[in-house]
Length: 293
Ligand SMILES: [Zn+2]
Image (cartoon, rainbow, N blue to C red; front, side):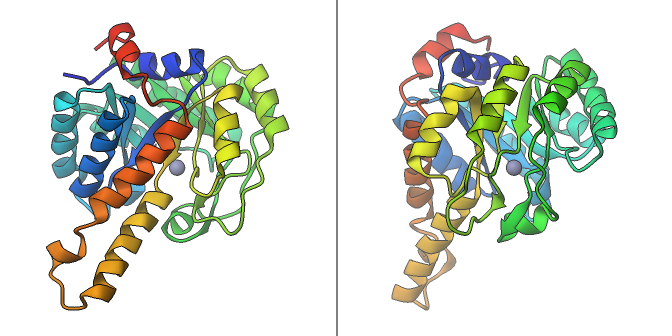
């Protein structure tokens, strides 16, 4: 049983200057790859299911598998609803086994964002479940992620972040500092000065969405500036698709099983690269002894 309290897990990372990876799952291949990578480098992991993906799979069917994987895992695991859109979806996710919720009301005006987030926090905290809120807006640029996050990006304003955290009581804060949802063209320019000011203004762990496309130096810097959770999906989707393209090229008549044969390994390798880069590799034992189950 390695399902652990997500608040404890993320605060352990926050205190020790590393970041836990939260990887969005879209199939059993992804689930097995992510858990396998976490176990092979002894890292805590957040198994994430994103509400915008629910049109592609039935999450009521996937969640029991995610929970079974968490229970069986030898490393600390949390299960989060990612980009939850409403109080109703947060309640549904918690009832079905999520022990963390990310509420995304970031496209609303600040006062409305605060009201919506506060209602989810009040409900979730009564269930012992921590909540990630977002202030500022991480928009999409290209690919699937862009379609799901339309419009212009809005960078997080430190004073607004402070007001938002105080009034909503969120456990973790997702910020917008230059990353994009989905695929990136060229290299993301991150506003580290802004991140520093946000980190000074609030006393909760920070979260980065749209991590795909950042370089190693940027990834290494984030955990030293209050970032304790990084959400990551697009790069996994891309390596999985690339693995299938390679197989299809070599064997155009290949069966479904044949064409997706390398997907698990490709996704697992990318997850492991991230876990090492973000400093969570090798931390599993400490987290297991220090966090509430
Ligand atoms: Zn996201």
